[in-house]
Image 1 (cartoon, rainbow, N blue to C red):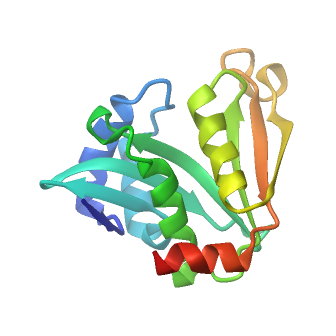
Image 2: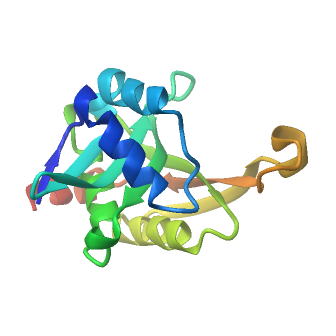
Image 3: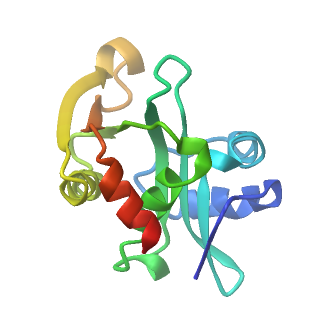
Length: 168
């Protein structure tokens, strides 16, 4: 398996991977292309035998530069059971583009057990707290058509633990 930055030509494969990973929200093909082209330093793919089997997109919020926001995590059925999601996020956080990150944030619906397990595991691995609070509410933000998204915050991140991850 090869962990690498995405290229713009990966857009179609990433779109297909996301579509094959319900309940993930499907972004437009153009959105996935922009993430690959403009945010490659903050995104990662895992490639196996020439196929993309894992994807994490993220960014550093301009209003909170000490944070890294995980936008989307997708792992194909072939890649499951290998801790790929956790490994991709850890790989992203040790890149030079994430220097100075002190907390990891994301949004997760209450019923997404796999994502909650992933982020609880990351908090445990880093000896950090995981906080949860509603951020985007069903009625106020989604006009009743999408479940409330809870912000999950992990931090402060332990620099020593991140360095240990980089050394692995």
